[in-house]
Figure 1 (cartoon, rainbow, N blue to C red):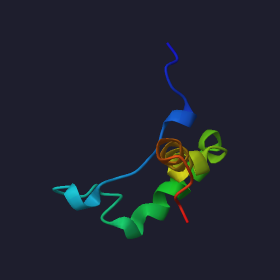
Figure 2 (figure 1 turned 90 degrees about the vertical axis):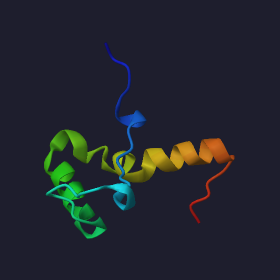
Figure 3 (figure 1 turned 60 degrees about the horizontal axis):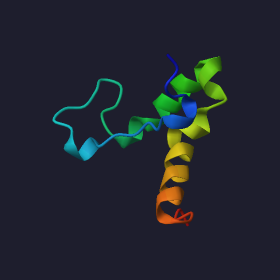
Figure 4 (figure 1 turned 135 degrees about the horizontal axis):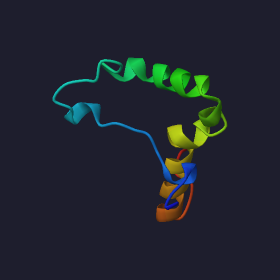
Length: 70
């Protein structure tokens, strides 16, 4: 059953609240490696902007009544 698609996913983390880090992500300096891994997958490349912030910004704008990113 199709419930949600790439327009419904936002990738993020709360590194301040993690008891221990993942091997690939010790801190925010490692974040670009996630983008590189997604870019290496043809299916994710077209949606990278949505996954890494575009969807989050769209939802925040809808909830707050405007784009609050600037």
